Image 1 (tube, rainbow over the protein chains, first blue to last red):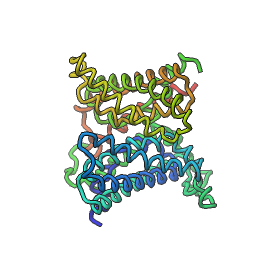
Image 2 (cartoon, each protein chain N blue to C red):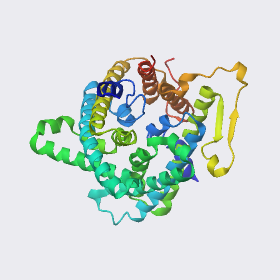
Image 3 (spheres, chains in turn blue, brown):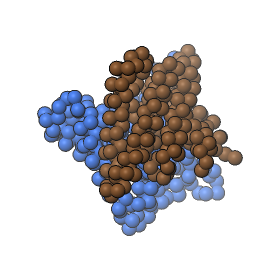
Length: 214
Length: 189
């Protein structure tokens, strides 16, 4: 439990360690894309780190990274084939950002820092915590960006081909809400992520003294 | 699309960092000053051009013929790792000064998502070999341009008074956001 909390708050990969920025910015214009990306990363992280931890004594040190990347890429391919088959529109929306999870620094850094040294049980908990932390962070950013930029929350749209029904909520009444278009664009992604990290700092970073500036 | 507009587009309107969100880790991490930013940019451009040629040939003449396109991730990452390793060895042997100049920035590129992402974009947009090379070269230049500009802004920012919670990455991201707004304006007619 402590390790999972650690992954979500103290070592949140996105908001504290600042890893895995590319997908966090690219796919968070929509709540659904954000959580699907988060869950994909969670699955890939947990399964590849378990395999790496199991093989940690067999993999020679000098080819470490290459072997890790091959293992990770296997699971990435698995996920993208699944999405392509069952939710093609989602696969379209995530585009190249799903395949480049292969070189995602969250997964690779956990493999190097934890899975290459620790027992399977510990690796599993760590990966679960980190993966959940990343997923929550993506969901938060996705939610903010979709509500402000589009006035909707998409819970099921792309995966409606699997679940059978669509869920898209309108947040504010249309006539008195003007969506901020720039939030949906790249610039909005950078700015919202910056603000969320600053907010997270102000809540959780205890060592930062009450600010003298501002 | 003709080659010149593709080249310009890949530098400005579809800039690899600010509109495609690729290569953000070095963008945020290695851009504290102009010199390091330039080294990173040059390394990325060199690796991009070489890998785009190799992956193009391998994709169309091996994977497509074998009907094994699902191996694309695996193949590309191996090619990138191989090229980076080879370049490092070649520089070490024949161009020692270049090797010292680029030092740790070259090996870091293996896990740079700008390379992997762009190679996949080249394949997904059905570019031919020339277009793929032009797109890679332009994107490499675009990356270098943005990372140098960003590095210069951050050098200036070191002396400015920033609220505590915004220090470091948050303010860097917001700066990048404003830059993205500017680059976005190239797109509008």
